[in-house]
Amino acid sequence: MLRFAMISKWHVHAQMYSEFVLKQPDAMITCVWDEDPERGRVWAQKLDVEFVADLDTLLARDDVDAVLVDTPTNMHKEVIIKAAKAKKHIFTEKVLAFTCADCDEIIRRIRENNVTFTISFPHRSFARNLYVKEMILSGALGKITTLRIRNCHDGAVAGWLPEYWYDPITTGGGAMMDLGAHGMYLANWLLGKPKRIVSTFANLSGHLVEDNSVCVMEFEDSAIAITETSLVSPLSPVTLEVYGTKGVIQYSDDDVRVRTLDNQEWTVPQLPEELPHPIRQFIDSVLYAKPVNYGVEEARMLSLMMEKAYIADSERREVAF
Image 1 (cartoon, one colour):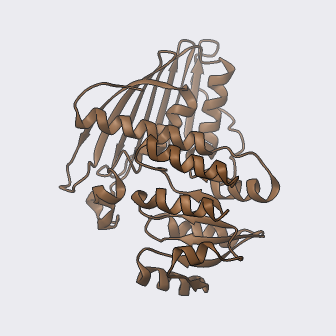
Image 2 (cartoon, rainbow, N blue to C red; image 1 turned 90 degrees about the vertical axis):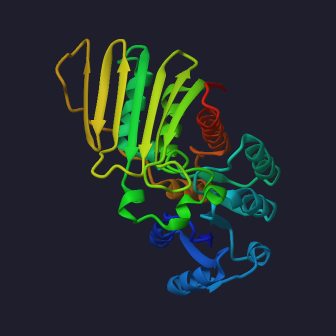
């Protein structure tokens, strides 16, 4: 049995994560800490577990094997390093940290203390993306020339995101840092290491962080990726397009189609089985020694891509990796 402490309900996914853990036959929640004590007490009461006001006290508990970190992003470094020193396994929301320097310090502590670490990269478990990865690796699409990913919602105009979601101090950014993370880690997974990046971020809703954003990257094999994300786009499907010298894949939400030079008619492929939810994968890694698919190196690369993306926008220039 893996015994979790929930670390903050700040992130909009925290409630969903707690519900997921409670459904697992080999996991449970034993306690809650929150930087907002009142929010934490209410949440702990709903979960029917103890609220612990002091983080160090919580991390010293024998009934905590792992922490699920949903704090403001600017608190990740302090909280995760404390958890690693306390020999607690760590699952965290993305991004890991705002800078690679902070990531490197976090990673050093994780490795020193030999704890399992997983970051939440759910789109890498989706069947449609596993199919895209398989097709790229198979060579069926030829040499990849262009990848375009668009992932948007209307949270900033429809008002369903909490107001603190737009605080640049705690979040480190807006649309790209939050929702755009999915496109960034997918681009890295599908295309490899990026070489250079340019960004254009805009603000339509009047918040202190961007709500509409595009990044364009060149990768080491000369493929170009365009990642688009927005918090002001209602009714927008999640779309992905991969273009290669021998074929193309496109999807809009779960509607996937492919055609190649060998079969020039659009066809609907048979998709592979989805991978388990990242939290399930984390539990399996800790309890059953299964491989970690989204670990410290993947987390570091996402932070690197974000760090460079925000420099590119703020300084209005191309930035090399």
